[in-house]
Every structure is written in structure tokens, then in C-alpha cells.
Length: 414
Ligand code: HEM
Image (tube, rainbow, N blue to C red; front, side, top):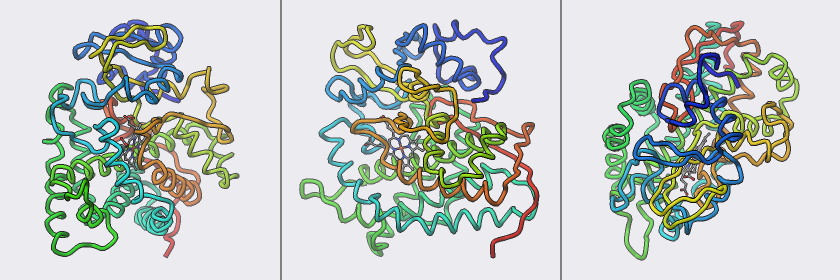
């Protein structure tokens, strides 16, 4: 994968000793850092943010995600932490451990089952078509701002039963937070403050739909849900909606952006995929493996334990790097190769275990439809490298703010 800035003057070994996933160096040299760490210090300690361990090998990450007795999310999923163990969860089910976690997860799972995806399919296709129609005659566009961002926002709002016309506000709120990140401690402490608009919109909809429910929508289902015979509290409702909307918006957008950049740089791979669009499902899995939009997340140890031969004490935190595990040669043959025929492809981009991503099949569907449409309707697109802007802090999302491209103008579909 191409990385901004090259690695010539960057000291990977030194970075590994002072690992900081909020730094610009991390964003610019992610893959070189992880390659070095997997080889030299697979379980490394960082003094940053009160101290934490960094796990870079596939087997070690798998050990943690399948052991919910030892490893907890009670201190939040970020480092520095976005919550104290005694705080109410910001994200549901994402912030809880089993068995409390499972109550909310079981409540959500039926809402995104295969038949829900079949119902969303025509909406996704039509939205992609219309968004491309809006710029195809111009011969230029910003594939993040004009396509990936509105698409992922509209699909998430549709699924969540929120007003579609609000999509620009959701995109703008995330864009603002991503382009001007606060210092990490502050960013995490003020996470709810930064989602103020989104939160207000959730609460308004809850009020509206208590009177006039949109039948079959996610909000209506949540309003009518009972946990141990009681309805959800407003806080539970907001934390569920936040987990789904935040989870759905930026990550899929980041995946698409990274994949478009890669295919623009690698003409042979693009031509191969264009000639074999039936391979798109496998190609999207490879995009997920290679361009993990969420490079890593945290856990806290509930007891003294050991990972990869390293003793870790109760109360210490770890940062598990899916983006590194996905390139581990102990798991993947020729991991540096982008191979649209790779099989099996058990990447960890969606995590694993009880917290494995709730929206993974929705992402797969969106990415397959959108990629196919772009490669068919803008077959010769080229990224205008001068205008490309990355999200500067990749601690939670590794992707692009802007992605200008040019292409031979085409015709609208209507
Ligand atoms: C490329 C797109 C996506 C990526 C890379 C991604 C990544 C992840 C990862 C790694 C986890 C596991 C967290 C952990 O173990 O601590 C997760 C959980 C979650 N994701 Fe996603 N996600 C994506 C798309 C989505 C979408 C589209 C939605 C909503 C429709 C969503 C909603 C959630 C929720 C609710 C959880 C919490 C699950 C639980 O704790 O049981 N994600 N996601």
C-alpha cells in the first residue's frame, strides 16, 4: 500500500519504541511501522497516554478477542480512554462486555439480517447511480465528498430510520472533527460534545416517532423493545444509535477511498478487476484486508495474564492492531500482494469474537455495489494527487478527507 511521505527519513525503530497512534507519523507510515513491529517487537510497550501495550501479530490479536473473561471494554475502545469504568456506556453494544453486551447485541442483530440487506440493496444501487449522475458529465469529482460520504451517510440513515435529508449535517460534523482533531486526551473526553448535532437529531426523532412511528424502522423497533420488561432509557437509545451511525458512516467511506487510491496507482490490478467484475465479492474482502479503515482498538486486562510471551498485569491496557494482523505472514501467504482471488481471507478488519462488527455485511454490500459502478462508469478515473488530503489522526479511522479525480466524461443513467 502506498503511504504518504515515503519512509526514507523516518526512523521506524524509534517510532516503535514510542508508539503513538494519534501522531502524523503513524498515519504516514502505518504499514512500515507494523512490518517492523511484527518482526522485532510484536508486543511492544508505549509510554504514551499513561502507558499501553501494542499487539501486532494475528495470533495475539485473536487470543485477545476470543477471551472476554480476561479482556474487557470497560475502559472504552480508545487510548486515551473515552470513559471511566463507572461511566455509562457511550456506545451500545460496543462499550460493554458479555453478558450485558449480549442483551443489546441480540436486540440489534435481527435488524440487519439477510432479509434487511435484501431490502436495502435497491436503495444502495439507486443512490450510487444518482450520486454518480450528478458529476459524470463534468469529467471530474471528489470521490470522497461527492460519492463515498453521501452514500454511506444516506445508507446509514435509511437503515437507522433517520431523516435522509439530514445527511449533510452528519457528514459535516464528522468532517469537522476529523480535519481539526483536538489533542487526544481532550478528543476522547469530549467525544459526546463532538457529536452534539447527531445526538440532538436522535433525541428529536425519538420524540417524533413515539407519536408517529415509522413502521419497521430501527427507531420504531427500539421504542417497542423491552429489556427485562422495561423500555429502553433515552441514554440507551442514544448510545445504540450512536454506535450504529458512527460505525456505519466513516469506516465504509474510508475503505472506498483507500481502494480507489490503490486501484488508481496499480493499473494492472484495476484492469484485472474490471475484466472480472464477478470477482468483486472476493476483491472487496482483499480491500478490507489491505486497507483496514479502523487500524486498531483497545481493551483492558481484568487479571494478570500473558500475550505473545509477554506478561501483562491487571489494569494495563492494550491496543490491538487489526491493520497489522492482516499483513502477518504467519497467517496470509504473500501478505503484501493485493490479490483479488485470495482465498481463504480471514482478515480481522471487522474484529472477531462477540464484538465482531455488527454492520460488516452492510459494508460488504455497499462496497461491492459502489466499486462495480465506479469501475464501470468511470473506468479511466485518475486520482489528482495534489488535491488528496488524508484524515490526519488515524487512531480511529484511516482514510481520506478529499479524493479529487478526473475521468473521461460519461452520460447520466436516466
Ligand atoms: C469498513 C467498515 C467497518 C469497519 C472497518 C468496522 C470495524 C469494526 C470493528 C473492528 C468492530 C469491533 C470492535 C471491537 O472488537 O472492539 C466493530 C464493531 C461494531 N460495528 Fe463496525 N465497522 C464497519 C462498518 C460498520 C457499519 C456499516 C455499522 C453499522 C451499520 C457498524 C456498526 C458496528 C457496531 C454497532 C459495532 C459494535 C459491535 C459489538 O460490540 O457487538 N460497523 N466494527
